[in-house]
Amino acid sequence: MKSPIPYRGRLAPSPTGHLHLGHARTFWIAARRAANAGGTLILRNDDLDAARYRMDFAEAMVEDLRWLGLRWSEGPDIGGPHAPYAQSTRLPFYRAALERLHAARLIYPCARSRRDVIEAAGAPHEGAGDDEPVYPASLRPDPDAPLPPLGERIEVNWRLRVPDGERLEFTDTRLGAQRAVAGVDFGDFPVWRKDDCPSYQLACAVDDAEMGVTEVVRGEDLVRSTFRQLLILRALGLGAPAYHHCPLMADEAGTRLAKRHDSLSLRTLRLRGESPGAICARWEALEPLRP
Image (cartoon, rainbow, N blue to C red):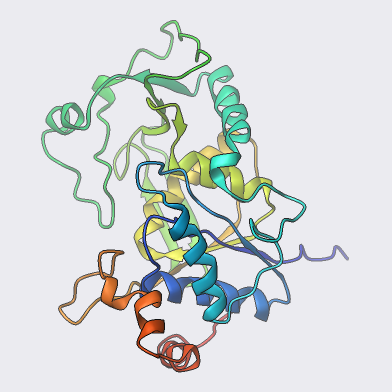
């Protein structure tokens, strides 16, 4: 009988501000699921957003997660077999993936602005939790048109051509069956930006596969991103992890928590004398552990 694949989970915060309670609860759920499975937990620093990244936030991120009681076996602070664990130092992995997509003619250069896309589509896409308007097929180049080389430095956006009309599905371990139609619920999306940086979708998909992640735990606002990343993984011939999308937290006014909610950051709560045990106990009451 074939042995099951050992569980490998990950924490993947972006150091663009102090961690708020919503992010912290998601990471706590991820750590708890890894521990319950007797598996390995990875810390990955998703620091590709150079415009907002700050070293002090990266240091605070590690400190605050440890204060909360989270522990990991691999990460930028301790190393491991899949180092480096900061996305800003993993660019060769992403470039290699981009070149494979280019060789397969699955991507194309796009000089269109977001405004161009919205105007061509007629209206912004209203997908829940989604900030990317559906890219109209009318703006695509012909699939048989000559494909320009990538170039040593990339100065134009490159988009993945999605299989229009294909019905996609995955089973979320919390939400159950999730379905989307490519070209309807989301369109061609960037995999590399004109500032010569990989997109979030490409970097996360490549890292999760290369690091052997077996389950991705993250907020339910990223369900649509999962479909995009599944298409990238399939295009690269890489296996996909399982997905567990957690409920989002809101403030007293019902607004989804974001890093601008500094009063609800872990750092602020620590300074107020909050106990990590008390914080986790409140979460346990709201989110009992489920397989």
